[in-house]
Length: 115
Image: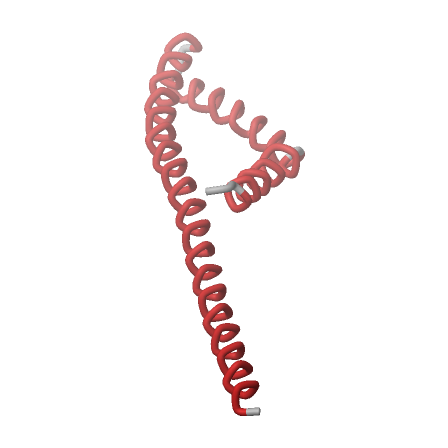
């Protein structure tokens, strides 16, 4: 009888160790996936910021150049801002297909990627 009791106790101890190890592994996998997704997103944001600054300076130059062609500098700024108004309306109308789906797919692919 004592032999059965010690066997059952050993079985419970091994099951408890297995459970602790499994939980710890899940935590580490979650941390790994979160770090992967965040690092990918932060690097994309950094590239986007640098590109945005480049585009900003190009737009100022383009506005001044168009303004000189039209006769008054502020006409160029109106023309470029009208272009961006049109682009922002199109992005708003198609935001689910252009932004939401792509970001969701990016996160899902990163989270389900095998290490």
